[in-house]
Length: 212
Image (tube, rainbow, N blue to C red; front, side, top):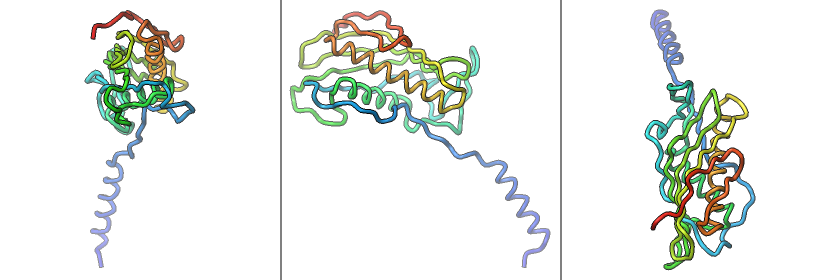
């Protein structure tokens, strides 16, 4: 039989362990909820290359901007995959819906299949408690094995969040990623002859023909 002193010590240790334990992690994605859309009837496919993201944002936990020059890691709120992979998946999903085109990362195309190749370089990715979500991206769309003009543009997207809680902040970035996909899709539809902002949240800058 355990002594009263030993029992008291075990209870104290259990209490300290409980106080020191971290809350369970919550995981988020940049892919918007499933919605309608056609795929596979565009006459071409898309290839979304790996997305380049800034090192300060490319962290497992959500990095919350709390002031003009301060960022706080939310250790219990994490991305479900590396941020670059989250953005690539969100863009692939959005372009598939908008264009009705399959992604070569999902379905291997036959040799010579027409493809639009999309490359994105993120300049700013901000989840902010004091302002809108910001997604600032330089992107390039280039036709492969089909007619069209390679196009390079910069899109700055600002989306106000519906609330200050983390799900609302993430939802704002989900919307920003969807708006970016729609803007890139407009450039592909035009054969690389310019692009159209997907909404008032999108500032489209410096669009020009790009050399292959």
